Length: 91
Image (cartoon, rainbow, N blue to C red; front, side, top):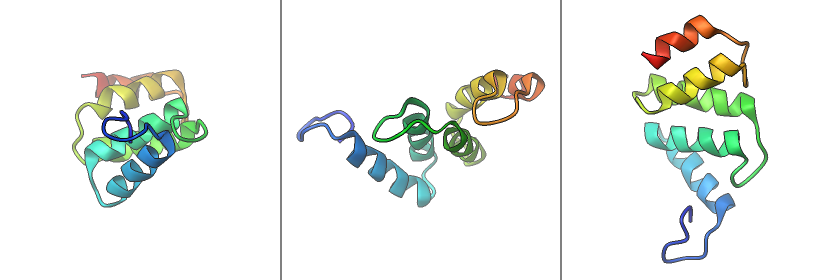
């Protein structure tokens, strides 16, 4: 659904699929769900949910989510701004 390969592109369906996989514990899906919330793909922008899902992805072992979480901490999106905590994830 995300790319439209083989089917018509459907951002809402992609978000639902990512969310289902994330709720089953898939760290990559957690990162994708966070990105959907961050950019409003398949629904409304929600920085609080984006932050929550990036944090879950990081704690589940998704290394790529660390930079996204750090950016949100640095900008104060979906959380209180915390540059020192952001630095721990940038490393």
